[in-house]
Image (cartoon, rainbow, N blue to C red; front, side):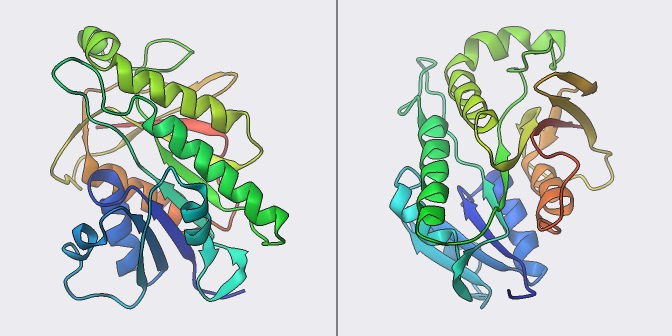
Amino acid sequence: MSTTQAITFIGATGGCGLSALKRSVAAGYTCVALCRTPAKMEAHFPDKPSNLILKQGNAHDAVAVGEVLLRPSDPTAMVDAVNFSIGGTVNANLTMDDPDVCKKGVAALLEALGTLRSNGVAGRPLLAVVSTTGISEHGRDVPLLFVPLYHVGLKAPHADKRVAEQTLYGSSERFVLVRPSLLQDGEKPDRKIRVHVESEKGVEHKEVGYFISREDVGRWMFENLLQDARQTNKYECKAVGLTW
């Protein structure tokens, strides 16, 4: 196996995913990004780094997803990690164009992994999946002031994220659910990132906060999940809430 880590990015044309991708490319890892419109990603990397491979495709297409899970240097093996950060946008009617965007994306990812293994491709990548606070089954993990926003204004995307999480918990994959608090723009490396941790059994460490930036979420994911993905991670099969 190549000594250089290989990481697949699904949903990295902006936000948390792009932040993690930029750091992974800068670290010299082999990065494969699945994009519906590769030109949008190319605009973020005008120097065209040789360790960034862009593939056109839809995250809901298990065949397209399977193609980007293959290690570029060795198609008999899978990549070491998958950074999954697709999501939908809530419109004025508090609905989404595709209310099942994450549910379908996770289903396609798991189907692709299963198909590759049935075809003899080896590997068990770490799945770093961006989810959300406000959907914990073990008590309130958002400030009381935010409860109306989360339970009314964000009801549609939260229902989708909840199903995606349950699907991953029901799988046998290595995964970490990353639940940021309300997202803002602008990295703030001087601000401490507090980490809430829970498993299916309950809360292991409680932290509640208001905001965090997309850039800081991507930085945390790179530093704590992606850069050493081949090793067993202490957060595997758990949900981590990130907040300032």
